[in-house]
Amino acid sequence: MPTPEESPLPLPVLEDYAEIGPLVGILIGSESDREAMEPACVELDERGISWELKVLSAHRDPRGVAEYASTAALRGVRVIIAGAGMAAALPGVVAAYTDLPVVGVPLTSSRSVMGGLDALLAIAQMPPGVPVACVSVNGSRNAAVLAAKILGQGGGYPGTPGRPAAEL
Ligand code: RP5
Image (cartoon, rainbow, N blue to C red; front, side, top):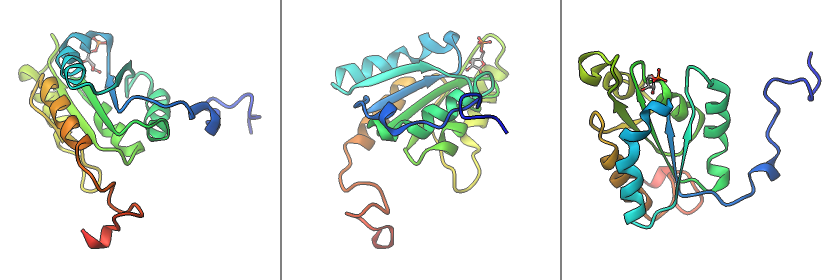
């Protein structure tokens, strides 16, 4: 049994996440995805919506993805946009770790199958109960527009005190 100091994934201390985060968290599976997500950043900037972008791979850094996704809401993030190519697990894994809405962006790369069909299916074909909103291949601008629309909704999340799920 490892001591807390030896633990490969130390439990987060609440104070570590007390800072106010941006409204939108943008994740990409690789540095090579950055350019394709630029339209989302521009769109959010034009709308005056705060955002952050982090490179976190569901396959290469699953613990990092788990920590980001499970603590994002604590920092004030309200929507997560996740872009990935190929076996694009990132949006789905993020959705597994958070109740925040997740918008997935399937991306093309030089090794994509059928221009990004691989990533499109990987993101859209989520199992019941764990939804990811999926935009078009390389549709990062639409992901930002959708995030803005989500942020524009009032009434809180279903099940929150102001709006019980049973009344929806
Ligand atoms: C995916 O594999 C990434 O999202 C990226 O689109 C693709 C290729 O990644 P690199 O090999 O360029 O890092 O996980």
